[in-house]
Image (cartoon, rainbow, N blue to C red):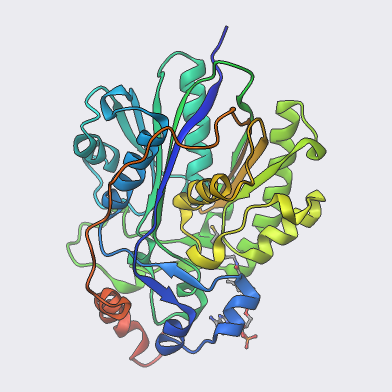
Length: 367
Ligand SMILES: CC(C)(COP(=O)(O)OP(=O)(O)OC[C@H]1O[C@@H](n2cnc3c(N)ncnc32)[C@H](O)[C@@H]1OP(=O)(O)O)[C@@H](O)C(=O)NCCC(=O)NCCS
């Protein structure tokens, strides 16, 4: 009999420094009402540490919640689109930090869908006997690629990390259905190429190449349609109907995208997890942070049917359907914390503003 993977531990790490809409009003030509009405976002985390630092705290909390030690893990998957290093992988950096000496480790890039791809990979490895205890982490330091002179992008994104432990289910709980997909042809709707070399040998980063380029309206449409279809396919695979779903944990990209997809699916908004107001879009970290909040808030109850769904750069999308186990509280807690930060949010964004300034202060500059 193949083992079904179930979530046994979860944890998140939210950076202590926030970028509020009022702060953004001081940086770009925008206002709080526009941002709240168009996106639902009020503030987002800005990390004073690196991607793997965020990942480490979330991972230690997830391990404690599962009642496990780092050495108990045999597979570590780190989903990120903002790796701090290419090789060794960020997963290997984290493996060393945690002392997860028995774990294989690799990074996974499916942009904002990274958590769903990671869950599918973890569940398949557990079902196939490749791994028994998987630590899955989604971590991002997205502000690093944000141009804080560009109001059309910089209001949306935030930093953070979420993690979970998946183990073989002992009962009827676990991942029941999965849908994954990609459309490389639509990939140009959201691009930030700097982390890949693309054949250019250069030690100098070009701010124009480095910044996030995206077509917000195109992504909006792709997302709404993509989420609806993907959730339906994952439910079909699980042999369940929408009426049987207790909680939906969507990627937090835009409150209007979530609401529109929810309407298409006929979902009661009370069943849909929303925490975008305080986190913004944190890409691969978005769904696991929302999952932690859904557990804390009581949206996910013992035995609940839980749908997780995301879409993102690539373009990629994916959904999982799981029956939650009997436990919705952590077995233990970790005292892991980020180092304190004495900088203001403007201090943290200063280097970034300087880096992109040339794009905005010359003739014909992008706006
Ligand atoms: C980016 C997004 C919020 C824009 O919302 P929208 O309703 O589509 O807004 P538009 O792009 O049509 O812009 C409307 C107007 O507001 C302006 N505007 C854009 N950003 C603004 C801001 N931060 N503050 C004030 N005005 C702004 C535009 O310039 C435009 O003005 P114009 O009509 O004079 O040209 C929305 O398209 C979105 O969320 N897309 C998905 C993006 C995403 O999440 N990507 C990651 C997916 S993983």
